[in-house]
Amino acid sequence: MPTETLTDILRNSKKIVFFGGAGVSTASGIPDFRSADGLWNQKYKRTLSPEEMVSRSFFERDPEDFFAFYKEKLVYPEAKPNACHLALAKLEKMGKLRAIVTQNIDGLHQMAGSHHVFELHGSVLRNFCTRCHAAYDVNFILESKGVPRCPKCGSIVKPDVVLYEEMLDENVIDGAVRAISGADTLIIGGTSLIVYPAAGFVRYFRGNKLVVINKSETQADGYADLVIHEDIAAVMDEAVKALEVQQ
View (tube, rainbow, N blue to C red):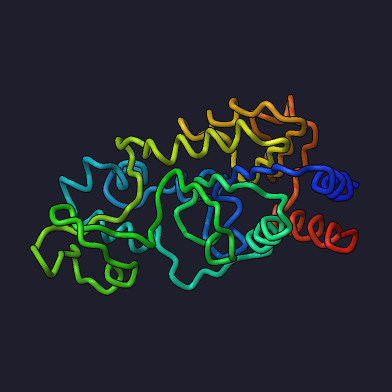
């Protein structure tokens, strides 16, 4: 069984890194973006694609429409960690998981108890004034009417999320690359490996076992040691529970 093989890999690994995408959070009620029915295959309003709606140029050109779309489609305040998030937190407590590199912006890994998380695309939980850099939580954004503005200086408060046309944070990139390059096992989960430059990070892996867990095929399937096309929450939950029994 694939999950039994995964449990064996987890048991024999000491420096696991997990590289995850939107599919990790679907069991928490957050839709993925690039599946057949995902957000990225929908048209929202006018003739703009979702990519354009979360671009830096649209944020600057039409902040009111940007925040209307952002609050409706990208922020899920009621979402809770699912079995995958919790399984990864358990692996970290066991001393096996060294880091999580995530393309998600929901903060659910930290909520589940994981500490070593590299958020490639930022987080909806952090927000900063574009002028004075004062920090605000996600509730400030959700409770703001129209464009959220800093009470201190009146400037727009921007989510700490990497928009299209923006560069990834260099410190986060460096940490993610170091983690992946030092791993003995890399688990790629819940991602189609389409979004670059994030998807290109997996090329830094030089370890022993590459595992792919995703409902659909990915670009890494052909050279992975183990490929599981099943629900990642169920797979990780079963594999880590089996590992706990063996400990």
